[in-house]
Amino acid sequence: MSLEVKVPVLPESVSDATIATWHKKPGDAVKRDENLVDLETDKVVLEVPATADGVLKEILKQTGETVTSGEVLGIVIEGAAAAPAKDDKPAKSEAKSEAKSEPAKAAAPAKGVDELSPAGRRVATEENIDPSKVTGTGRDGRVTKEDLVGYAKAPAAAPAATATATPAPTPGARPEERVPMTRMRAKIAERLMLSKNSIAMLTSFNEINLAKVAALRKELGEQFEKTNGVKLGFMSFFVKAAAEALKRHPIVNASVDGNDVIYHGYQDISIAVSTDKGLVTPVLRDAQAMSFADIEKAIIGYAKKAREGGLTLDDLQGGTFTITNGGTFGSLFSTPIVNPPQSAILGMHAIKERAIVENGQVVAAPMMYVAISYDHRIIDGKDAVLFLVDIKNQLENPNRMLVGI
Image 1 (cartoon, rainbow, N blue to C red):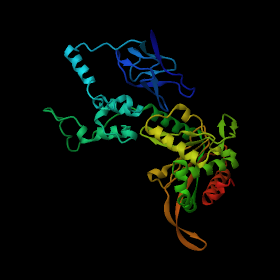
Image 2: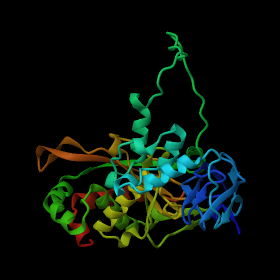
Image 3: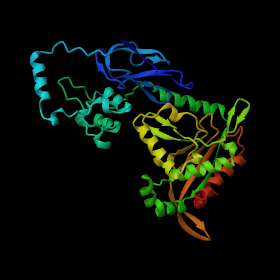
């Protein structure tokens, strides 16, 4: 029975996808739920699995082609077996039989392409890397995308020199390389221009003394980790503070739709996460109802999925407000760009020991500059400043957050 391999139904916000990588070729055996092909959208990479055991008969859409929901990518013959290679000889068959009778350790499965994440498979395919030759640093020795990238860059992975070696660059040469944008990078560029050209954007700044948050983390961090299995980070404090401030300043949580202002009665906070292809913003839904542990676990989970290329479209849909942390890369000060259709974004930065005055005394304190960029069409400067001051007051008195005031 012939089965069609189709593009899954794409959300309304995603019009089409590009075929990134086929993991099988015609004539290969496939297993039910085994990934056949990766599709790259503006936001994530989607896997298209086989719906039954059989053989991939035909590929109808090639790598690089653009496809839409429901299009047929290939044909699988259900229940069929892969044809043996034409040059197989009896001696080879006998050798295989003897190999199967060897001790179990000889039959242990090698690290293969099928065990890799979508991003890892892409690197292995593009760089022509045999994953079994790469030392894995992931859980249970799993080979990660970073392992493959490092292996590709290592001198040992370079092809052996031949008699027709490529000549060294001429001194003074000015080499250039033209590389097309990925779909994700092109979409990021499009949205940044949309934000710049359609929003009356303004940024306000403040600074926060995080000494009490640091003390609270030191006091409760060990017990928190034992109880919840995750560390108590700074981000959960900022998410909780933002969620509470958004309740008290609902215009900052609103969005513009034509001549209407939409007020959201919930706080779905997008968290900016950096990937090798660009910035993505998975959403903490109903952040106002999440505990510190829930927030930390969700952020860790999203970061892991982002690194492995496992974020789904549902993870990225929606969001009423965004938090981005340039401080993880050392940024001291920046003006973040609003993510439409949202109307505001909070920028965190590096924590630095600075001299401040407290009770008439000069002391050193862990200080962070924070910024809020906002759509001035609906958010007045007063509202933005009061929102930022609300966050500052909560973080400089973190016990208030713990008791909900």
